[in-house]
Every structure is written in structure tokens, then in C-alpha cells.
Image 1 (cartoon, helix red, strand yellow):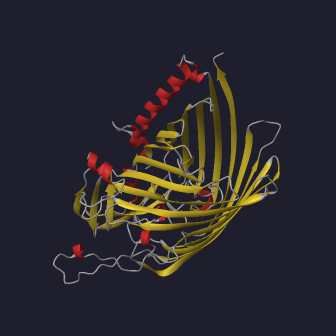
Image 2: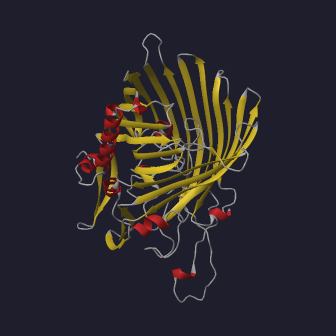
Image 3: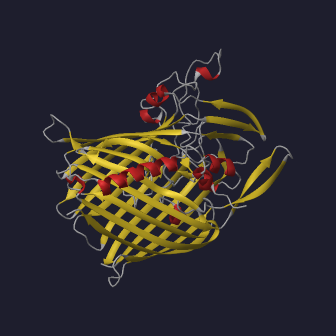
Length: 527
């Protein structure tokens, strides 16, 4: 039977999609009906496209699925998408914009294992991608240096190249985005009393997971746990030296905390207990800077993130070279850099005045240390004679209380770590976060009407923070993408992707995707 989680959400009384629609409606009415001089000019942008994908295996090749907002996972299907953006004059002190992005698909099915406690037997059930969903729908704005957003918006890394990087360790474009509301600075702003040599950027947002049905449908209901009704708070704080100088440094931290909801625990197909967590106002405040004394045994929520450092050197008027490190952390051990060489180490070349090469990235990802194999605190076993602590087994993107750090099965951090959507045995956790990878990204525009992007990587995984694999899994993946925009038809572009995987992360695959997109814009003037 065809399963559509999004259709179920649309019928719920407190659906986040309905809230988003209210925000969008209010914004559009404001922008089109305001009689003051604030919204004299309204820019309308629109885009519509259709693409078809055909590949071997159950899932699309790695690079054809990763960092695309969860739009594509299955090996065969048709995806259609239409979006419209309405925005006010960008030269004003107050800017307001609304975005609506609808998607629909028809895909091949993938069989997942399911255990029935009633019959003590295993079976396979077929699941597809949803038929229809709201990919983006949000209102955003800016007043002077303060920015805000409410709704569903695709994620972007605040530091990395979203087209060429393997993916941000904390907030990558890989998953479907959550409905959320956030406020922060509109980019880097100069700090007072520093004579312009120090700049700051920050953001705080609260989001609500709407993927209860997805986890329930894909879980095998045998062992492990299943969390429902989770919340997420995301925040970041970056400091940067004067960006107008030839050399500048950016340093800061990203943090995400899952909290609230309830968790059901299963052992051999039997639900053994249910833990419920409070979502009172004090929990929403505690998770900004996690403190103990919450509804869990230790700190409130599951907190993870990355410490980000980037050094940029400008080679005259030719190009920027960016050297960066993202150090992952789960709770406290990684914050103290007890996880050795773990992190995303990268070098990016970014030309300033065009050229045949429009961008290049090389990255090395290491997640094999994880602060050691043991994690122990005296509170685990009351009355134990062992009073020492062992902080380790970071088990990136997994947690004992909450679902893996993913939305609709796609990891919200680095997609190099195999997402739960690929676990056809129905296990809902991450099984390959103890891994190493090398990634290359290259982009070129040899002609004004033609652009080319090449991505390639090698990955090898030995298991996760607690359970090793009997046999390591590995994969070589590559993708060639071309986009042709004929000048004869303004706004039309044709996109072709060719992808290939060889290995066991998750399996061999090869395929192609062909898409056609048309976009345009116009201005509504009041004079």
C-alpha cells in the first residue's frame, strides 16, 4: 500500500504546515495590500521543474540523493516541484519575503523488515517516497541588522560551500527541513568598540519534528527505541576578523539539541517501557545552554554540534583560499577535543573574477576516534564502587533517548555517514558513524550557457560508537552534473546527472537523472 506521511500530517489539527500557511498568507497580504511607501515595489520570482531518475538498485546513487533537502532517495521516479517567492524592495531598512515550494513525486518502492509480536514472525513491507509534500514554506525578514524566519526552509551550511562540500557536520542541506522559527543577525556585523577588526554572527531557532509516521513505518519494532513528538533547538555563534583584509579567521560553534516528546523501548519485539519528557517553558529555556535537572537523568536533551574554524587568504584579486576544520562533538567529550583527529578537514579554492574553474574543494573526514570506546558515569550504577568517569563512545548522531539526528530518515549532519533510510532491516539508528572519507568537488563554467559539476569520494566504515561491523563497509561514489541554459529561451535550463556507487555504503548503484526547469521574475510597482 502506498504510504504518504505528509498526507497524514496535513490532516492533523495542529499541523505545522497549516501554521506555515498562515504565516505565508499574512505576509502576502501585507506585501500586496500595504498602502504606505514601505512596499512600493514587490519582486515576484517563480520556478517550476520536472525531473526523472532511473538507476539500478533500491536507492539513488549517493551524490544524486545527498545534500538535496531529502527530495530524492529512491532509485526510480519522477519529481515535480514548483516555487514562488515574493519579496519587498531589498534597499529598504525593513525587508520582508515569503516563499512557497511544493513538491510531488512517484517513486519505486523499497522493502523494509518488520517484526510482528502477535505472530512472532518477520515480514517485508514496501515503502515509497510521499506523493506530495511542502518542501519549503516560510516568511523571512530583516530590520536593520536583525533577521527572522518562521516556517520550513531548506538548510544551508553557515560556513561551507553547499554545492561542492561533502556536507556540514551540524546543519547540512541533506535532510528535509523542520518547521521552525528563528531570530538572529543578518550575516556578520561589526562588533562595537573593536574599530572594525572583529565581526559577529549568531542565530537561534526552535523547530518541531513532523516525521513521527516516517519513523514508525520504517522501524522494525524489534530492538532499539523509537522517539516521537521531538523538538529541536539550533544555535550558532561565530566570530570573524576583518573580512576586508587579505587574511581573516572565522571561529565559532554550532549546537543542536533534541528534546521533549516520548520514547518507546523495544526488546525482542516487545515494548518494554515508555519514557515521557516535559516540554514546559523551562525546558525550552534550559536547552539553549543545556543544564542538569531536566526530565532526563543528566542534561536536558540530546546536544551535539561542531566547533568550526576557518582561515581565509586572498591571493590578490585572483582567488580566495579557505582552510577549515569542523570538530564534531556529542555532549562534552568532543568539546574538550578528546576525540583526537576526528573532524572535517577541508581546503577550498574560490576564484574572484570567474574563469574556467569556478570552485574546487578537497575534504578529509575522520570519525574513528570518538573519544575512546567507553562511556561511564557513577550514576549509571547506583552504589557502584567505581567512582571514576570515562567520557567516550561519542557515537555521532545516535542517542539513547532520542532518534538519530535525522529528519525523514536523512542525516541532518554529514551525509557521508549512512542515513537510517538506507537500513532496509528496519533498524532506526546510525550503523556506520565510525568511518573515514575523502571527498573532492569541482565546478566549471566553460561556456556562458553551460556549467559542469563533478563530485567524487571514497568512504570506509567500521561500525558505530558501540557496535563494530563484522566486515567493514566501503564505497566509491562519483557524479557528473551538467546544466545547459539555452539563450534562445530565457529562464529555461536542462540538467543532467550521472551517478555511480561501487561498494556497500549502502550498495552498488548507477543511474541518470534528467530535469527541465523554467524560472522567471517580475516586479509589482505601486506607482
